Amino acid sequence: MKVKVLIADDEKEYTETLATRLELRGFSVTPVFSGQSALDIMEKVDFDAVVLDVNMPEISGLDALKIMKKLKPLTPVIMLTGEGTVNNAIEGMKQGAFDFLLKPADTDLLVQKITEAHDIKEKHDERIRQAEIETILKRRGW
Image (cartoon, rainbow, N blue to C red; front, top):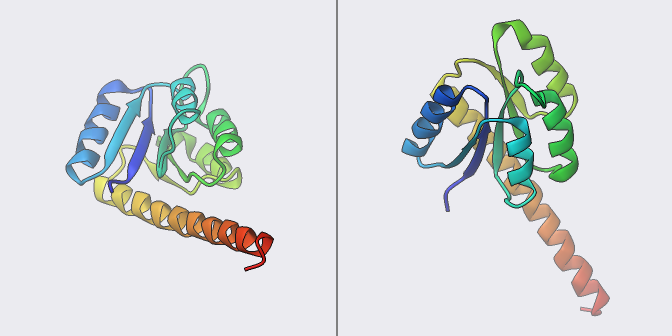
């Protein structure tokens, strides 16, 4: 099963190019061009990882991150930032972002970060499933 990635960045050409590069590496990618669009789709779809630009109009990446962490706390978010907003990306890490990369992100490094994030999320999901199974079995006296 392909790793499902959401990319949210208001730079349309950059986002589409990045999405294509990730798809060529076997990911299932959904590109959106605003923080609000990312939040809207996250309410309906589960992603294995999110790639989120820090600097976007309307809803900033940091504000979107706060909401994403309430919506889907286990979904890892990788922040993308220009050189002038590195402090914002560090603030995002404090707020629960998985990691951050400088734009334009090196595709191989981004693939590595997405893979790491996905692996950690899978382990969390498996531990949750195991705990749920154990709870059911205890309730039934097994």
